[in-house]
Length: 86
Image (cartoon, rainbow, N blue to C red):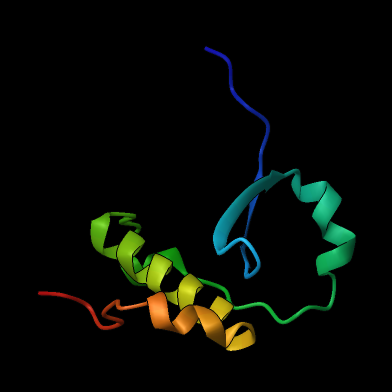
């Protein structure tokens, strides 16, 4: 079985083409750029190490909200629930 190298995921919104773009980058290539940047750790133990549908939905909602902070034009397309769904 071939194992791919570790990757970081970069998600950005291109307002001109109205697309969300996902790029895979080697963590070492990002390390110097990210040094000293604001970081929000997501502690997996707080989610009982369950990366399930609910976790993915909340993570996705958070990513869209963070993009919208700097590019408010995307807000008109976002209609997600930020709170956990029972």
